[in-house]
Length: 309
Length: 274
Image (cartoon, rainbow over all chains, first blue to last red; front, side, top):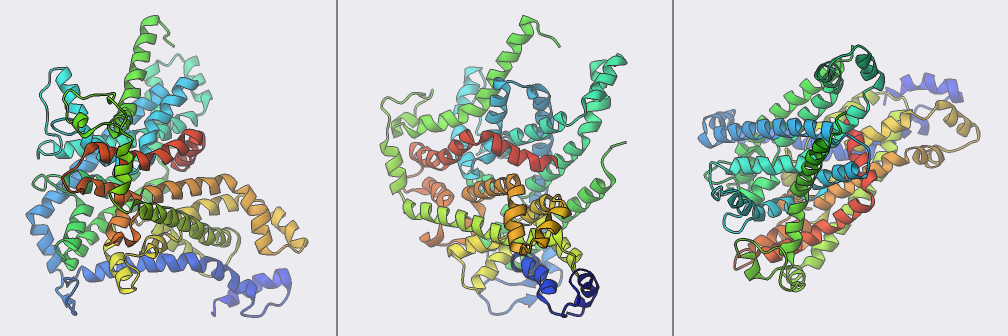
């Protein structure tokens, strides 16, 4: 507790002489300790443990964990399934995020109005955001049912053949992306609307005085002013999409033929079905690296501010 | 702007279409929940069931120990809420209002934990819970979420905005720190506290991933797991029973949303803008 000495000078200013281990010195640590304890036990230590395990071979039951160096990682990178997992994760993330962001930007420009109709619409499109992923998954499984589902019925109405949404390797990943966009679009739209409403009105008024055409106003004012919001939603979307699990677990179980297997599901499979703990941990470490890079980029850009002249 | 009749009609049609994209799935859920098994297997589909099958809800509820799931869900959700408030409030106050050695280090630690998603570290946490002997108990579902880095971050910001003079005045009146928190800080931070409570409740009431991984028997299973298992009832999935079960899970949230709509939206969006 030698560092408490530093504190003494400050305390003397307020309350005269303080004993070295007085309550005033210890109090802040007492206040943060419950939270810090939980962080250490359930976040920091597990991360360290996962990195340790990724260099070992262990099957849950054997008494020893054998050190295998980087063998798990080299296995992973040469494993055809894992390469597929990486490409699936990137495809899923890219399309989910770009479709969600693009569509919600348009919806925000459209629904950013006052009045009962528009606030009702905003609430409607937001509602999937607070529904359990279990219900979202089951509901869409039923809607995408190949024989009796609503979606194929709607397609048949306009003369399109039925599609095996979740059971054909060509469509399964696209179906999951569709569900993710449906669930996420409302939240993104409302954040964009909040962003639009925070743009100072006088910028537009100045542009109108200059007779700037509407599309130029959009490109020169709206887009730059929205860029922090856009950036925030993109990064959050990418980080979330890389961890997709529930819809995959419930709707496709990674199939058909591995076509919808993604990072977290792969780790889950190798950990809980094949008991290859070291191998699953190595996959976890790779995901950790990807997410860390994204997070660092996020803060780097944020500290520079995205535009603000 | 344009307000020609043509434009108004197109706008209205667009709004109706958009509404249907988001409302029809839920109506479909409700409609299916009241059907007979036979009615779920007709093509083209039936929208209005012949007679409302209330029995479906009873069957869904009786397909497993649903009372236990429900109690577990309520206990887990509320224990997490209570523990989060008990750990977040003092930590946020210390980070906002005190200077102490290593403060920045501990705050950086909090920020790192804010960035670590639980879907990433479930495997080592599972192994730890198993070695501490609390796997498959409700403590395994509660303790990992006993605090919230996000909550500390948000509440600290709101505590920092309280002017120092207020605290000085209270200290001159011999107020204890605990009284300052209770009488000054918490009332001023009320909107943030409500936001955090809504966040935490909705996230943990809906959570499927964590209970799926951390439970191996009926002992600690929660509602979302019970609902998910309706699909694996012997004899294959009966969509009417599955949808009845899901309606039971979704309805409380939708009702809360209906009444606290503005509040919930503001809570979720407010954090997205700041």
